[in-house]
Length: 199
Image (cartoon, rainbow, N blue to C red; front, side, top):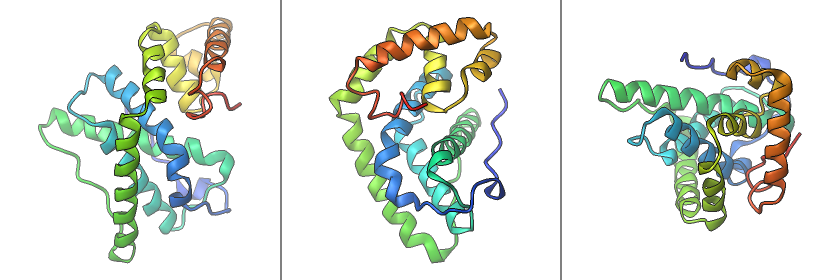
């Protein structure tokens, strides 16, 4: 499977949104997504913490270099970066090496260090969070199709029709399955925390 293309900073809206301000809000979703994707890829040697941390480092690097985002597009923009990080680390693993971390120039190195410390602390908390573990208990009992819809539609913000095409499903079937899954998620205490019910 080909790695997705890194979002072009020229394609995002001109209103700036600082990465540090949203790390805490979006990191639970990134962490849960990374665990699900790594499970599907069969890559236990890669830690979700590393994927989350490198994603934020790259996002900050891009914003420092002039990339701009809006609150509406920011989640999808960050998950696009996260997909690249995950695929690069998976490819590096097949070559028995770790992907080299992406770093900006010295002018932002102190900020990057602070982000790394912040994300490490967040991921440590998330690894012990009972709410997150309840999410994984539900995900573990989903079939492969529903789990893929959860990843694509719930986390990555892909439309149900686009997800249906990627999963080789009839659109009507995907819509019904996603509606049923959303109903199950509505009854949980983690769906809002992970941003899974936003339209």
